[in-house]
Length: 405
Image 1 (cartoon, rainbow, N blue to C red):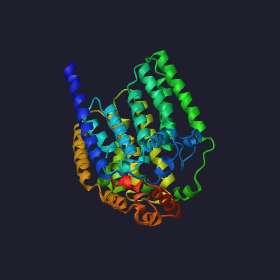
Image 2: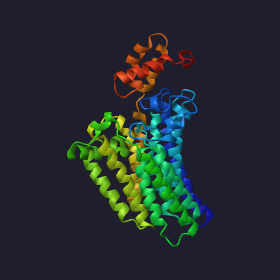
Image 3: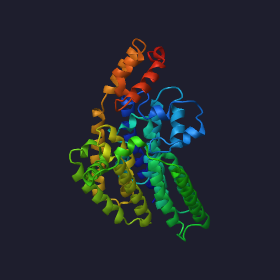
Image 4: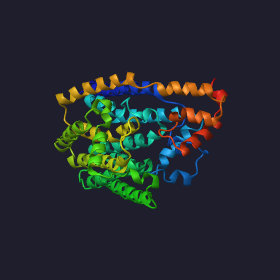
């Protein structure tokens, strides 16, 4: 293949990724708010630079020092849209990375990872999922086509960073550890590359063990654990189709069965090199889905809030799509994904943006307690004494005059 011919697929892939990144950017510009939301109060507000003890401290079920560090840096000047834009930039880069050779994969991957219906583009803490997914997919692309030392370094580095992005990152790192050890047995790889893979796997195991040391489930989350098989199956089905947005919401169980069956067949029958590596990464993505379903079933399905899981579930689709041979079915799916993604943009609500403007207008004219009661949905997904207290304190220190400029 000539240089110009080889450049065409890559150019098309990047163009498709840019298209969906533009759609997601439009959603961010339209929906992202400057204020903290829910977990952002715990993860992004505080002194700079943040102390090491705070970075490593458990947040809900997670330890996410890398995410905390980035969020604290983004929130230094009080505008929480910076973290959302960072999430978008990282995910767009991941799409471009995995879609360098095939246009169909570019369109499908971007439609799944940059779905405008996901509330990832509203919530700074979603950087947790975005970072983990990006590292997992970068490790996958290099492990699947590993040829030398450079690929081994990328896999090892991504594996080591994954546990620093939270609980899903720890599960993703289990896949990178196993994949690295499998690759290390490949005699066609240079000895240095194989040594790097083994060293990275050992170091990641040690970091995972440190991550789990002293880990406890938050008492308030004990009720979230699955309490029945039927409830678990229902939530698992909804999670499985979360990357598809509202397209699959009407019949999640039926769509989930069809989608998972198709993805399993695709991943299992792939003719690409290193089928075992594909299966390992696919299994890692399935493990994340199962863990979220088990840990969140008791809470039920909260419409809108649970949409953010679409990003962390998307690797299940992407791994199978990247490994699949080019087919007309894939091209048809790409077209449908494009249509669904474009159609989703105009439906993204502007209610929050309008409420934000009303808050700015009222800021400083009424007591902070009254503002917190009136505008609590802008800051928390649930009403509680703790939420009201946190928001009241936050609003009491807002620079109202600066916000109105």
